[in-house]
Image (cartoon, rainbow, N blue to C red):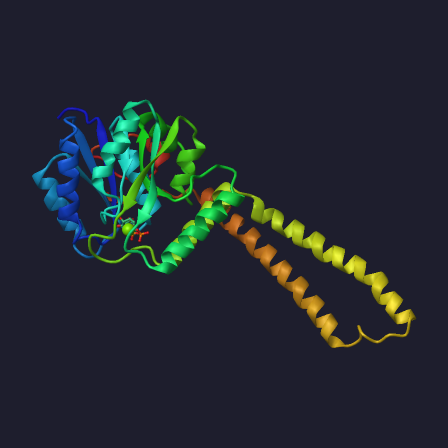
Length: 325
Ligand code: UDP
Ligand code: MG
């Protein structure tokens, strides 16, 4: 088989009802490029029969290359595994629920041919999402933009094309708590956005419940910003400042014989306020320390049950314990 020019990475978690349609549309679009392509179907521990469906499709079309995880590791890790195995000169990351229309890949490729090395798709419109998702997503993008050091473009997801140069760099970044959108901006290179219309899910329901979105937000913030760590310092200065100002005020009031500030309420408020500040600061420290601990343990990023012949990364980086026969 000739070396593929394009690699498509699709993370899959219980998407059985979307798989045939995903394959049909990707095939149609990619065949129209006239170039050889491959598709990495990364099964992130599905339990709805997606795994078998992937095997079935791959048996029919050798351009489909399954990467089957031993359990659910999460979307960002699934995409990472795809990057580790992709052989193409340009690698496209796409959701498997058809919210990212495969036809838009052609626009990404057109920009890549002009010389851009990271071509990210920007959501100009979104269909079929509830207000809560839209609201939290918008809040998320704005928060990230205001406190992180890298300029992560607004309203972009993981739907993007990466040149092989970028992929090679990203393969060396083995952090466990990953925010790929940030990482692919952090590396630099020539980047550009292409607007697209984000469709509604073809079928099934979201695999990103609030808990997973919250984790992604925390990973994004801790991965790219130290602002939360500095928060303790700011709050400390504020409460110390308030108490320093309060001392002469209280003394003056006492000397004037006024009784406003007596009683337990004041003490209670001060104690609760400081206690709150200290607990929040501890919690923030904990977020970073927990991540530090995870990195130090150095466990494999993911464990595969089945994967293509050999990864494109050094096995010492991948540390995934696959035995290649
Ligand atoms: N996904 C995954 N592992 C997970 C959760 C999601 O591989 O633990 C995949 C999912 O199958 C889909 C993509 O990540 O292809 C995006 O998930 P989803 O469409 O549920 O997220 P949403 O579009 O609702 O934000
Ligand atoms: Mg989706």
